[in-house]
Image 1 (tube, rainbow, N blue to C red):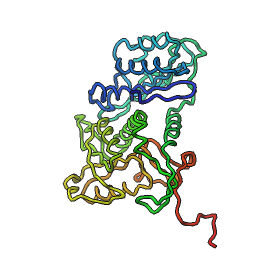
Image 2: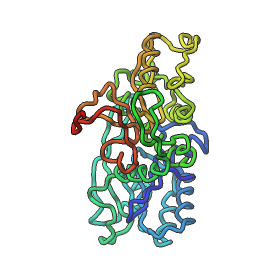
Image 3: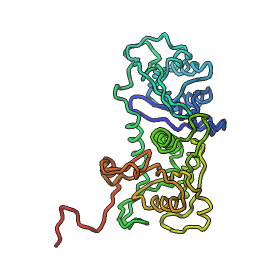
Image 4: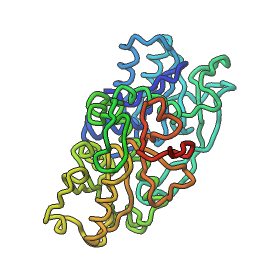
Length: 365
C-alpha cells in the first residue's frame, strides 16, 4: 500500500516520511509512531515498485523528505534504478547530511534551491535548524526544473481531497439529525473511509502532525516533561462514534496516546452510568470526530468531560465544515481538521446548509 502518492499534473509526489511511518508502525511494527526519522530501504522498495509497475506516463518524481534526518546505507540504488528507467527525480526538504549519504553532493544544478530546514525535538518539540534544500534535482541538466517556485503540497492535497469526496456527497433534503437545519446533501463518511483507505490513512497521518503542532508547541500542556523527557500528563483521545473509532485507533498508534470510547453520543443521546469511572479528574482530553458539521455532538462530549472533572483541550476531525468566516471563529472553539468544507468548495461538493428563515434579500409577504 502507498498512501501519499499525489498527482501534481507535471510530476508525481511521494511523502517519504508518511510512507516510513506506515512501514515502521503497520508493516514492521516497530511502533515508533510519527516520531520515526530514519528512512529504510523497505520503504523506498515499496515506492520504487509502485512507480515501475504503474502505467503512469509522467516521468518526473518528487520525493519529500520532511522530518527525515537519517537513512539506511545504499538507498541511492533506488534513485539510480529509477533514473536508469528514464525518470527525473527531485528531492524536497532534504538535508545536506542526506545528500552526502546518498552520494549526490557533487551534483551542480542551478535550480537546486538551498534553505534552512526545521526539525523538532521528539520530546520537547523545541525547533532546531539544519542546512538543506527546498528542492534538489538528481541531475546536472539545468533544464530539469519541474518543481514550481510556489509549489504548495497542501493545495494539491486539498484539490485531490475535493475530487475524491465529491463521489460521497449524497443528495439529502432532510433535517440534520441533531441540529435544527436542513442539509441538501450529506457526506457518506463511512463509505469514504472504507473505499479511500490509503488516502484516509495519509489524511490521518497529517492530522496527527497537526495535533502535535497544536498541543505540544502551542497548547496548554506539553506531552513530555522537558527535564527527563518522559511522558507527562499526555492527553487522552476520546472516540465518540463507530466511524471515529477507526480514526482514533490510528491516531493512538501514531501519537502513542490512550483512548476513551464514549459510545452513542449524538443523535442517540444515551449517557452510561460508567462514564464517571472513565473520565479522570484533571486529565486532558481531545475529542476525535470523523466529520464535524455544526459541532452539536462535540459540545455534548465537551460538557460531559468538563462536568466529570476532566479538561477539554479541543476537537480534531478528518473533515469539518466552516459555517462562519475565519475571523469570527474563536480559536478555542475551532476544530482542527485535515480538510474544511467552506465557502470556497461547498458549491463544488454540492454541500449546502439552510433553514426555513428568510434570507436578508427576501421580504415577508
